Image 1 (cartoon, rainbow, N blue to C red):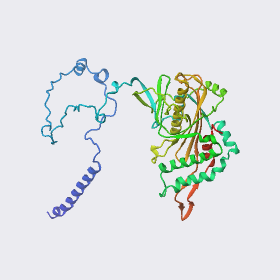
Image 2: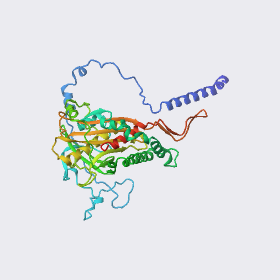
Image 3: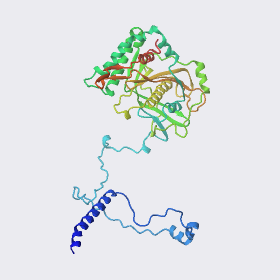
Image 4: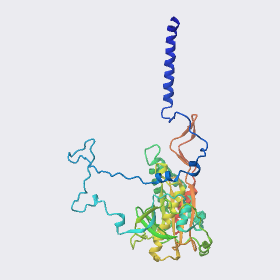
Length: 443
C-alpha cells in the first residue's frame, strides 16, 4: 500500500507531462490537414469491369438522366425601406432611378458604348504615353515599319567632329548645371529625381540657346508643352493610333533636311522586319471601339513654328517601377517621333499612302537626369500596310551617361573619405551630342 501511494505522484507527473507534450504536438500541427485511417492507395486501380469497360449502360443512363427541377417559390424580400434607416438583418431597398427632369452632365451615366455616334465595330489599338511595350524597340519597329541603324547619322556626327562649332567650350557650364540641379537648387541633402531632372533639362536647354548669338537661325525655335498629337495608320489589317500628350516638343520654322540619301532609302526595300511570334505586335496597346480616325499635329493652321524638330522625354518619377526602363523609353520615343512625323506628312501630302518625295525628320531625346537616349527618325513612306517596299529609318545612340554619380554626402569607410562630395565620372561627350542634335538642321 505504501509503495502504491509513493508511486502515485510520479505517475501523475508523468501523465501531466504526456498531456503537455500532446498539447504541444497538437499546437505544432495546428492548421495542417491530417487524415486518420489507412493511407490512400497509390498504385494502379484494380482491374474490374468498371475500370476496364466503364459503368454499365443502365447506370450510365441514370447518371446522365436529368433530375426534375423543383419549383422555386419566390419570397418577398424584407427591406428597411419603410423604416428609413438601416437595421441589422434587413436588406437594403432597391429604388427605381430618379428622374431629375433635366440633363445633369455631372450625374449622368451616359449612353452605352454601342449607342455612341463614334462607335466602331472594328477595334483600334492606341499607343499613349503610359504604354510600356513588352518587346521594346523591336515592337515599335514593326508597328512603324522602320529599319534600325545603330549610332548617330553622319550629318550629326559631322557637327560633333567639327571644332569650329566650339562644343568643348561648355564643359564647365555643364558641370555648373549639374551642380545646380543636384546641390544648389534645394535645401534638401539629396533632392529627388522629380526635382533635379526638370531643372537639369532647363539648364541644358539654356546653354543650347546661348549658341543663337553665333547662329541666329536658332532663335526661330519654340518649345511646346502639353499639346496633343493624333496620327492614324493601318498595319497588316490592324488599325493603330498614336495620340494624347507626349514629351516637350521643340518646333522650328524650317524643317530638318533629310538625313539618308536616296540610295540608302531605296536600299531599305531589301530589309526584312523582325517578328516575335507568338507574341502579338499589338500587345500592351489599348484596344478601343469608340474612337475617331484623326490626324492632327496639335497646332492650328498658320502657326509659324509648324515643323517638329526634337521631342524631349523626362523620366522623373521617384519610384523606380513608375519610371520607364531604357528599352521601353526608346520604344516610346520612336512611337511618338513617328506619330509627329506621320501627322505632319498627312497635313502636307494628304491621307493617301505614298512614298514621300521629301522625307520628314524628327529627333527625340530621353533622359532621367543622368542617363540619356538619342534618336533621329526619318519618315520615308506613309504606305505602312505591307512589309514590302521602302521602310522608314531610325538612328539610335542609347545609354549615354552625363555623369556617373553626384555625391551629395561624402562616402566614408573606416573614418576615411572614399568619395568626397561632388560630381564624379563627368562625360562631356554626352552633352556634345545633346547640343549637336539641337544644332542639327541649322548648322
